[in-house]
Every structure is written in C-alpha cells, then in structure tokens.
Amino acid sequence: MARRADPTPDVPGTRLPPELHRVWGVAPPPATRGPRAGFGVERIVATAVELGDARGLAAITLTGVARGLGVTTTALYRHLDSRDELHVLARDHALGRPDPEPPGGSWSAGAAAWALALRARYAAHPWLADLPVRLPVTPNALAWFDALLGVLRRGPFDPPGRLRAAALLDGHVRAAAVAARDLAAPGPPLQPGSALVATLGALLAERGLSRAAAVVDAGLYGEPAGHGTDDDFRHGLDTILAGLAARAGETVHGGAPHPG
Amino acid sequence: MARRADPTPDVPGTRLPPELHRVWGVAPPPATRGPRAGFGVERIVATAVELGDARGLAAITLTGVARGLGVTTTALYRHLDSRDELHVLARDHALGRPDPEPPGGSWSAGAAAWALALRARYAAHPWLADLPVRLPVTPNALAWFDALLGVLRRGPFDPPGRLRAAALLDGHVRAAAVAARDLAAPGPPLQPGSALVATLGALLAERGLSRAAAVVDAGLYGEPAGHGTDDDFRHGLDTILAGLAARAGETVHGGAPHPG
DNA sequence: ACCTGAACACCGTTCAAGT
DNA sequence: ACCTGAACACCGTTCAAGT
Image 1 (cartoon, each protein chain N blue to C red):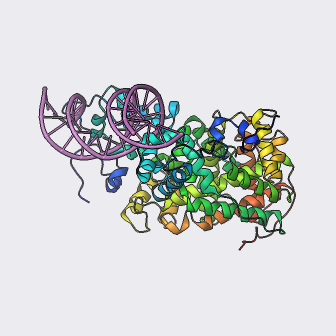
Image 2: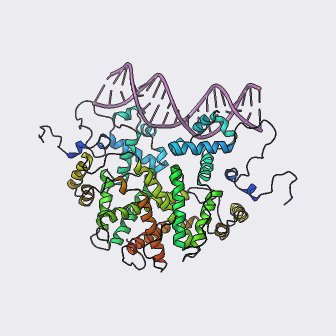
Image 3: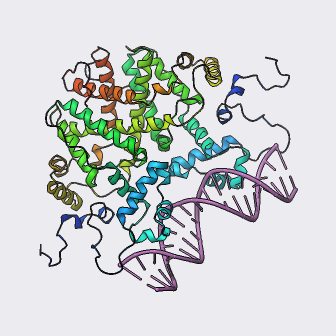
C-alpha cells in the first residue's frame, strides 16, 4: 500500500499475470533513459496487424514483423515474450474500442447493432476469427463484452442468461466471418451447369443422396451469392434474436430492424 | 460414351477436378503390378487423423505423417499432391458417415439430433473445426449435408430456407466446438476470488466498464463449467431452433426435446 | 539497454538420383 | 513405380556476443 515516489502510477494492473502486462500497458518501465529503442511494441503490433490483413493469420510471424521493421527476428524478443503474446496484442489492437452505444432502442435492436459492428471488425481483420476463443481479459475485448452486456440488460435475461446469449451472439459473428471469408476463396468451379456440378449430381444420385443431389441439380449450390454472405449473417442473427425472444416468452414480429 | 475393356468402372468421378480424385476413390489406377507400395493413402490418412486427435491441426504435417510411417517426407508426394490434399482426405475420413436417420419425429427433433451427432464428431476430432469452411464436395461431407436436408424437408422451409438453416446449424456446431475446446485449455486463473479476478474488477471499474465488472465480481466469469460446455451448445441449439420455428410462423414450446 | 549472429529443431515443396 | 537425399525458403526460440 506504500505509494512509490517515482512517476509510475500505482495501477492495479501490476498484479496482472505477466502475459497480460503489455496488453494492459503496464509492462515496460517507460525507459526514458539509455539508448532509445529503434522501435517499440506499438510498431510491432501495427506491423503484425498489417501482415494479417494482407495475408492472414499465418502471415503474422515474428520473422515477417522483423522483416517489416528492418530488424532481426531475435531483436523482437526484447519487446515480446513469444508469438502468442504478439497474437494477444494484435487481437486487442484490431478489435479496437466498440462504438459508443446509442441511448434508446430495444434490446434486440441493440444486440443486432452490436453484432453488425463486431462483424465489421472481423471483415476488416479476417484473421481475428482464426485466433483461439478466450474469455475477454484484455482491454478492448472487455469493452466489447461490456457493451453487449449493457444492451442485454434491457432484455428478458437473468445474469447467466445474458452470458449464454452473449456467447451465442459472439459465436455467430465468428462463424459467419469464417464462412464468408473461406467461401469467398477460389474453390472448385461450382457454377450451375459446370462439369463438376453435373458430375457431383451423378455421384450423389448413385449413392442415394437424393436431397443433396436435388440442391446441386437446382443450381442452388454454386451461387457464391447464396452462401456466407451478409444476407446469411443477417438471417442467422435475426433467427437467433427471434429464438432468444421466443424462449424468454416474448414475441418479436419480423425480426430486429436493421440499424444504420 | 465408349465402354472401356479394362476392369476400371466408368464412374463419373473420373471427370472430377484432380484435387478431388483421391477423396472420391477414383484416383490411382489400382496398380496391382509393379513393386507394391509399402504404404498407401489409407495409412497416410489414418496417421494424419491420429496426429490431429492427439495434438491438433498444426500437428497434421507431412513431416509428422512420414515420421509415423517410417518413411521420408518426400516419399509422401508419390501419394499426395500437397498438404492441402491431406487435409481434405483427413477431414472426410474423420467426419465418417452420419448415423442412419430415425424414421419419425419432428423436423426440429431431427435437426437437434443431427447437430448433436455432428458435435460428437467434432469432439472426437477437434481439429475439424480449424479447417477452412468449404461447400461439401467430398463423400462424407455430402452425406451429412444430405441428412440435414432430409430432416429440414419436414419443416416449414422453402429450398433456399433449408440452405440458410443448414448453414446456421453447421456454423453453430463449429463455433461451439471451437469455444469448448479453446476454453478448456489452461488459461489465466479466473476462479472467483483469485488475484486476477480482483485485479480485473478494479481495472474495469476504473474504466467505467461496470457491467463487465459486475459479471467478474459476481464470480460468473471464471467458472469453466459455465462457458463452452455442452449446456451452452444445447442452449444455443434450442434457441436457433426456436428462432427458425418462430420466423416460419410456427411456435415450439420449451424447445426441441433432447434425443437419446 | 538493445540488437546481431549462430545454432537448433521444425515446416512444405521441388528436383535429381538411386533401386 | 517407388523411395531417398540434397536443396531451398521458411518457421519459433535460446544463447552468446557485440556496442
């Protein structure tokens, strides 16, 4: 409890586990004397985010960041403990702060707005969806979590119900982001009328998978417009919100309105 | 259209794109003469699945498979085009065939049974959830797809509605599988009363994130029993099914019954 | 205090040989 | 036909030096 004389604030963050020091900004004694570092954690993280945005999570490597900064890979270990910590820092940076919550509106409209806003962050940084799922323990992740809990408080949920709803909505955003990104990648040519579609239809019929065959034959299968799109995300979101309302004894007609 | 004299069946599969030949079993001219291979695609794939089950998708490497089989890495290229093809084959093998559909029952009970069965496959092979999302074009993936379309045909959906519902259910299984696996991994100690929880509460209060702070302080945050569990999966599934029913103008009381 | 360089164990993939 | 071995470009991480 003794206050220290130096300018370092006596923040509670200093009791965080070591791997969370840097993401909470309590790690490095500012180091204002001695040979100044040619680069800092900020530039490392910014470079990591750029690499991920351009070429995916696999491109967020210590080697790649070092190349981008013009230093050796091993120099990064002065600023970082491991590649895992780089991922922690990059995630929180890419997440950013959520938009301020508009005051009024129903819980379901608020939840829809939250989900769309998070979806937009995943769209800007698709590699976010490839990081492991963690309980939010970093500043920006917790700010998003707090914002969602705020809108859900206006809904018919008890505290555990809020957490379950939050997990469901978060999972949907993540799943939709992965699907949108992966299905947009070039794959086998599934356009209606293509040789592959005809072949697939024949193989499915041969194996008695008639219902999948019907979908393929109807040309519903290869339309990239039909899968993993924003419409799909919206449909799933409205379905989840309708389900939450229905299970709480409420009724919502026509789903949540589109915000914005 | 000319029938060939040799015993190779004139299957339509021979018109598939090359990267799908092996997974459909139409690739290698059986090669019954000449020096027999010491190992085949079957043993490669079985080894790959074992590696993934034991140590995750990152462990499914050509190097690891070769080590397991006692051959050099480069020898695998006789049987495989790339690591990607290994992933395609391993996924279809781990997915297996879906269980035969029980005859009667409501569409929602059938959909719940389908989701639980797929969830069980993801539990047995957690690395499945890390593979990229693809439209099903392999035999077992298509069999699962066909099974789900079969139960959804009994529900209030038009063909595009069936596809949207299928995407939503598939995404939920995947998201729940990832969350369950990742949250089960050892992380920072978030037990109620731990130093981290106290510190986090203080930091959140300091930043005005009062609703997240309340969750943390109430001890709802660190209970591993509360997040990513089978209960969470069930809750989300029932919510989605209730939402699908509600949006189709139906009403389901109390969610879908638990099968089994 | 900060960075470099060598070293090690690990990847996927290509190509030239061996049998 | 099948496998080995060398080579190349790429990883994360540790340790001993350099300035």
